[in-house]
Length: 152
Image (cartoon, rainbow, N blue to C red; front, side, top):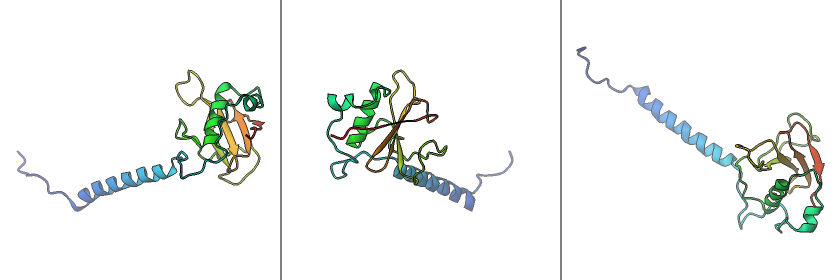
């Protein structure tokens, strides 16, 4: 037996735990402020809220868009809710493959890939708020194709 009793808790040992908890709470709160929020009744949708699925509108979209892109465009038109937390977040355009615009002008949205275990590589990038420019990428931002979205 060493003859030592229980060690008294040091000043910084107790404060360290408290500091760790405070940092964890701050990190969670900060992350919550960054998460996109779906439009509610008190928050107007970014563009017209009419359903996008009308045959005339769907036919006006380019043939290179997969069917799932139409679903994503309908969600964008309604302002969500979006299936992935990253949807609606700012797209940085760090590689400069899209025209130069101020930070915050581009936003990204996932186009579901059937059978993919994750978000996949397909995205729609919008420009402006409300969106007035659209690009599609099937290869995770390596290339983009511009397209127009018909207005209701």
